[in-house]
Length: 336
Image (cartoon, rainbow, N blue to C red; front, top):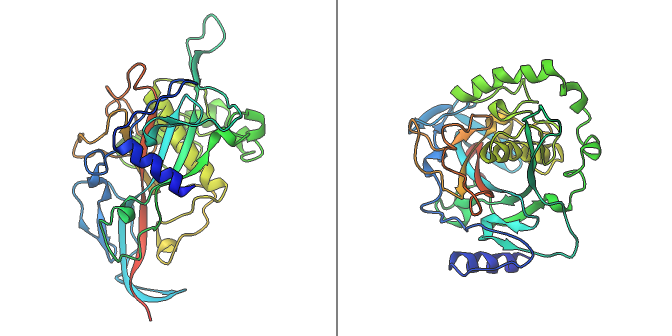
């Protein structure tokens, strides 16, 4: 499977077009040098203090200089940085791999097509939408060999880790309740009104983990599936689904916590996602490398009104690929 995946990546990187006769599928394999906003790696910290900031936003780091771990035995220094570790496609076309150059597979069974439609009711102008999402494991720093012999980096290769097309929960609101029955608690006007506060916080920094049912300015987190009940724009909807997918991966224990004191000696279970642990930027259709106020990454929940302007356009620009950076605290040192 990995050999096949890397062959597809090579085909895409060489610019060889792959046509699909089953439906529209577009995309691009991102250039890791020019399409990734490398300033998102910062701030970096040692011993709880920032050593390189570059004007980027950060969360709290464990205080103190030295640290120890038991398995394996390590004595080291507390470090913190933002690691590009995941990649996410949000697409209307099932089995369309936007991040792999727009390659469309045909596994032999169908999945719902994505769409954008107006809600029923003559007086209702609200739009709703649905998309499929692909989750990639992408330890970019490791496979690019940007930093050598650093035990804090996740190892591995670019690989497809999750497809919503084969997940029955992703396209069914009732089945999704099996994974997140608390949806009933937050599907009311009072709970949704509280998301305005999360929007304000995400617009100036990171959103609130207390308001875990909110994705800031982009909408409500629940249900954890591909149905966007209030579709404002393709950028807003795809950003919301990126946030939902991350929360879903945490809920299913397929993604773990990496930040804070608990993350110094390795990853740990985190069934309720820490939204301040992540920030992201667009890779396709327009690489988000131009900075706004010195930043080209945004935390989950930040309004797409500014950075999303001009990032979506008809036909070739309605499917999306994002790079996800996660906060990594680590005990960097030596062991026996």
